[in-house]
Length: 350
Image (tube, rainbow, N blue to C red; front, side):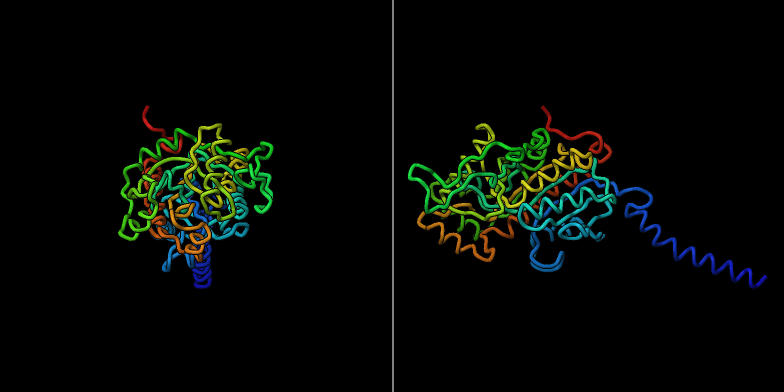
């Protein structure tokens, strides 16, 4: 009897030891089923570690949303993180190729059910001083790919050409139009979110004489996003971005911010939507202004670019703060009203 009792005790102990990792595995999406994600927060770059040092686009989300559970993503740029509320944060890496590959890696991962997830793509950007000020936040109506083009060397541009770019034959992926009802809802919900201002920002903005919007305190607005992997700057490039946006949106769009990843992210989400792995109608793109996309009066583009070498953007930290503060308003609403948001995509009252 003693031997049988000892054997029973050992079996209970062994089952208990095995049960803990089994429960953890089930919670991670296998074998009990995939993790049902409510919101995916997409950031593009980080300065160092995920927490505890100088922040990039990811760190404030990790710390403030308590994205404490780390899950490896071997086919993506970086591991992903989750919190107990069903919010998943990811880091794509810089530029369109890494963004597209990382988002696709997450979207095809069988551990996750993203079919009802909302996507908040949030990062910093260069802003058009004709429309926005440093530290401002822009919800995208459209994301335009600025890299599908014909181009000749700048030293060989004909005198009657405004730039070295020429419009390419129209292909899928030139322009991604966000769900306008959802964008309107997001803007209405966040338009009065207070954004950080400072004397340093006021001094930087004051250089842009002749641009009334550029010298305003930071504000939330909506406009259009031109995505290229090349960090460009200058008056002529700004004029090109505005013309490019207008052309590809049929004159409806207004270029406001430049980004380096969003067309790649939107392409991946478009394919995932086709596969039933994501819902393109639940996607939002938020960019906050860390710098202006053109030189201030009295400075050359080269001088302006040199002043921002090594990421010394005049509104770097305020723009990071704005992205998290404005974007998190959406995240919290979705989580707090999940019983409704899961089945019904929100829209602003008519």
